[in-house]
Length: 268
Image 1 (cartoon, rainbow, N blue to C red):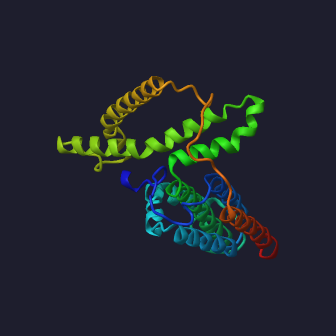
Image 2: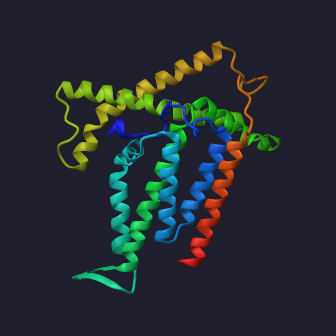
Image 3: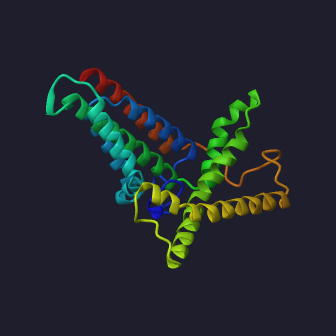
């Protein structure tokens, strides 16, 4: 399960999406999130699915790799579907068993909410898979730089988010090694009920937290030894500039928002 988490991983290939400006990809991801919440009918979700397939094809990222990131969220997706299915009121009853009723409105809402969660996870995973942590940090810092006039710590926030994304695969790899080592010593993480599995995870969490704090201390010492002082006097090897593909991408995202608004008006 740990190997199925794609958030924070970078898929290094040469593609049109990888070559886009990181600021363009961050803005596109934010616009896409807004578009997901604007979807109201099956037409809107079909448009979002088509957009994801197109983006994955242009990024040369296997779509099964994006779907793999949904496996750790299976419980949340199933729970979201069931809660909306059985606790959403409606008029058109499809199934009635004792006091439990399933209506057409509840079924549609359960499907839509589950798809919304899946699209959000896949879309954000596509951002990190096509953008290196350094580029993501630079783009985020530049986008937040106007807030520096309000004494907002833009550089510090961008650095923290980048370090967090960078160390997600590292911590997952460390957790996988610790789990395999303890399973070789007789530990059982899969049998028993939910409470028993939670108790079995305690021997895994303790060394994982110790390793995380040790890595954080090593990173802080390394940054201090290199005279890191935030963004004071900091220069960049690569200066970010918008090109024609970036403007075309933002125009495409604006068109997506317009289509989602029209979908809500025409098909609602």
